[in-house]
Amino acid sequence: MGLYQRSWRNRDGKLITSPPWWMDAMVDGRQVCRPTGVTNKKTAQKIYDAWRAEIAQGRFDLLKKAPKLMEWAEKYLKTVDHPNTRKRYESSKENLVSFFGEGAQLDHLSTARVEQFKQHRREEGVKGSTINRDLRFLAQILKQAERERCLARSPFDRTKFFVNESRDRRKPHILSWEEEEKLLAVASPRLRVLVVLGVETGMRTGEMLKLQWKDIDFLNDMLQIGCSKSNAGIRAVPISAQCKAELLRWRNLIGPEFSEWTFPRFTNRRHPLQRGGRKAWANALKKAGLPFFPIYYLRHTFASRLTSAGVSPLTIAQMLGHSSTQIVPRYAQVLDQNRLDAMKKLEALKQSTVGGHEAVKSDEPIQGIRQ
Image (cartoon, helix red, strand yellow):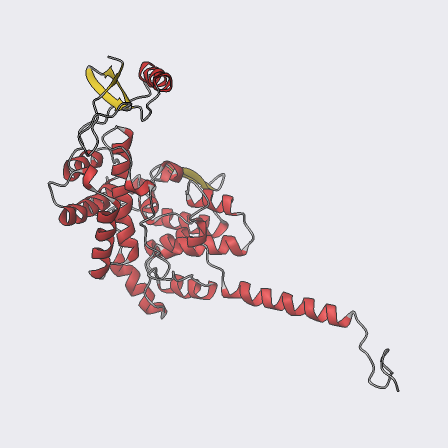
């Protein structure tokens, strides 16, 4: 164990007088050989000493045998807690295994193969957002394999594979104040409360349906979200006067005596209603004369109204339950009224600037021009 030289021959079969030095050491009970890349013994000794120091400090790890993609993906799925996230990752796993094969190993997933997968999905007509979800799942399991030393380096560290979603993403419908009045006029009592909660608090649909009466503090005008898709989603949300009035009206209709859940199943009062009522939502939009859009877009409406009010992106992210401000621009759209106000301000600035200067009279001589 130490430094040694191998016998090297050139193309003519003659021995090389000064071959490069090699080094070997025992790592985790295995003999590992590495080339130093130099022919000078003193330099090779320094490289060898530095390598031995890495081994002694535990900073040199041997790569484990690369597992198969399907087995590693199933192992990763067991660590995902949220059922909706796990369900989405299951779909991504099936798409990846269908393309790469059940026997594909992680170290065989090169940048070229990942690029082929992306191109294959695009040829199938899959949207960019769906492709990105599959790629994000693949990036996560490869990064986990890199952390556990089953992979030297993830191909996602070398290049960017994600598709630009802006051209495929559907623009969310931002509910105007007039459209909100029309919708509330035709909505059922239960749907009316959900609409007001959506536009006044920005809660996710799942967060609203899992509310309990004990989570709502009518005295201090606050509600506590204790069940969300992420840790950042667990938060306290202030409620407006309109939101408080609607919640009190709904409580008077069913009350906590019927169920501890704010939106219970009426057939089983011990459990919350897991579905948002898509059919009732579609019928309400049709009665109000509005185009169909997912009820989740009420969350976009809330973020856009906060943006119009001049609220900082950090505060908006905290109220939406996001861990950072990066995704806020996707939710917050600039309203048409804001554009009109901006143009009016520009016109006012123009008028004030032009009015502040005296216009040159046509009958006065201009300096520099002879009469």
